Length: 253
Ligand SMILES: [Zn+2]
Ligand SMILES: [Zn+2]
Image (cartoon, rainbow, N blue to C red; front, top):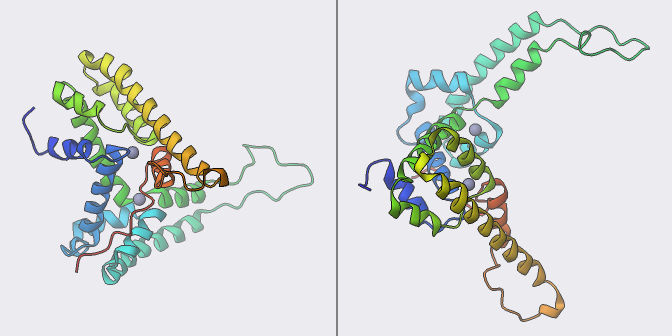
């Protein structure tokens, strides 16, 4: 398949040796999004970008990553206008808030008498919404799309089968995306060989983890660690799709 702008990163991900090529791509997409939001390009000074960060906000995980990235003034400016909007909305929600009926001696019947939820709904939506998550999701959609397009290429299918499979999170996403995007000609490959690849590689990492635990048994003293030294971070990646051993991503000087 001809190398194109979309296929290059996907090929690189499958060449990377990562326990999940989509975790590898997600890390890239995340760093790109953080760099765009808070990096030297100062996109936070662009009114149209700021309007979006004000509307979408940032999740817990990404606030921490923005903090670690280290652009204090850039963060302060983004936080300032986002915060102002939250305060304004909160005031409006509080003005409209109807307190729930007093608790009586009898337990309240739900849902008729349940507390009004608009303020709660608003608060939860604000906390779940994230500019960086949205940007990353958009990139990932593109990568899934490219993966299934590339699956028509025999050389790429071979490369996938030589990879280490996927984490559970991205495997689930692939299975979901396959409903719309998997070419009919590749059903046997995906539901057969790729499913086997997934299973075999989970078993492999589980065995590495078992070996790691076994090394703490005194009867194993002096034995070879084999491939188990980093079994804990690799297991964490397989189960939840993260690179726990990554150092914080920090702003380029
Ligand atoms: Zn993953
Ligand atoms: Zn986020």
